[in-house]
Amino acid sequence: MNEHLYPLAVELLQQLISIPSYSKEEDKTALLIEDFFRHYKIECFRKGNNVWSKNKFFDPAKPTILLNSHHDTVKPNPSYTRNPFQPEAMDGKFFGLGSNDAGGALVSLIMTFFYFYQEPNLKYNLVLVASAEEEISGTNGIELVWKDLPKIDFAIVGEPTLMKMAVAEKGLMVLDCVARGKAGHAAREEGVNAIYSAWKDIEWFRSFQFPKVSPSLGKVKMSVTVIHAGQAHNQVPSECAFTVDCRVTDSYTLEEVLETVKENVTCEITPRSMRLKPKGISETHPLILAAKKLDIERYGSPTTSDQALIPVPSIKLGPGDSARSHSADEFIYLEEINHGITGYIKLIENL
Image 1 (cartoon, rainbow, N blue to C red):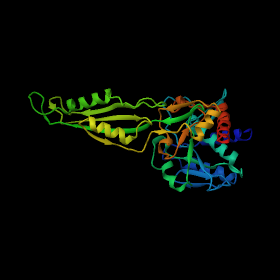
Image 2: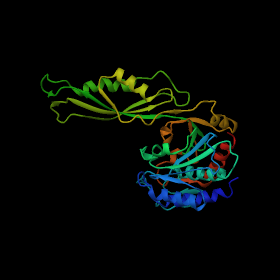
Image 3: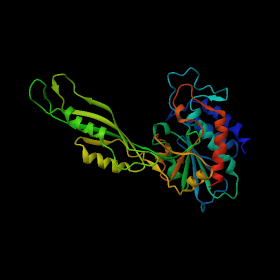
Image 4: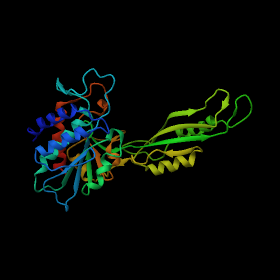
C-alpha cells in the first residue's frame, strides 16, 4: 500500500527535523512543506505559517475530512545528548527534535493525503493542514486559517497516540483568583488576613467533586498550582493571589465549570481563556464505527492539542508515543511511521 510513500515520509521528516521550528518561528518549515507540495504539482495555500491543500477532485457536495497535524516544536530538553537538529536513524529509531511530536504523525498524514489526492471517486473530500503554534495553543495556528478552509465536517488530528484513537480530550481552563482582605499590623488585632480567606477557597478547589463522570475521561480535575501573598513578616496581607489549573471533561462545558466555581468561592475569578474546550464524539459517528470495524483501541486523552480549537467532531490518532514528547533525545520508531501511513489509509477507506 505505501511502499513508495514510506521512504518519502522519512525523507520529509529528516528535512523537517534539520530546520528549527519553535512555536512562532516555523516560517522555514512552512516553506519546506510548501515546496514539497509544489514539487509534486499539488496546489497548496499558506497563511502565516500554516500550509494547507485539498484533494484534486474536491466536490463541495461531499462531506469533507480535515487531516491536521503541526510542524512547530518545543525547545529541546536541556538533557539532550544528541544534536536535536541532526536527524539520525539507529537501531530502528529515528532521532531528532519533533520526530515524535508530531513529525511522524504529520508526514504520515501528508503521505495519506498524497495517496488519495488524485482519486476521482472519493466518498469524502480531504483537506490537509500543517498548522503552526500548536505547542503554545497560539492564535496564529489552526484558528487563523479556519475561515479560509472549505466547510469541514469532521477531523483526524495527528498526534503521537501509538495509533490508538483518542475519542475525547480534556479541555483546559486556567483561573486567576484573588482573595481580598485588609492590611494591618501582625502584632495587633488588625486587618483581615487575605491568606485565610484564600485558604477556604483553596480547600474547596481541593475537595470539590463534580458529580458527572465522563466514561472516557473520568472526573473534572482542579489543581491549585501557584500562590502569592504578603510582603513583610509583620504585615497582615490584604491580597492573596493564586492560580487554578482546571482539566475539564466532555461531561461539562468550560462555562458550566466556571459558573459552579463562582457559586462556591468568595474570591475574584478571572479565566485566562475559554478557547481550549473539552472534546468528545458520538459512538455512532463514522470515525468511531470505522475504528470498531478495524478493532482500533479507543481511549480518553488527558492532554490538549489542536483538537481543542477545532469546532467540529474530531478524533486524535497517530504514530509515536505521547510519553516521548518533549523528552531528551526524542525519537520515533521507523516502523511506527510505516504503520501510521497504513493505519490512516485504512481508517479513511473504511469510513
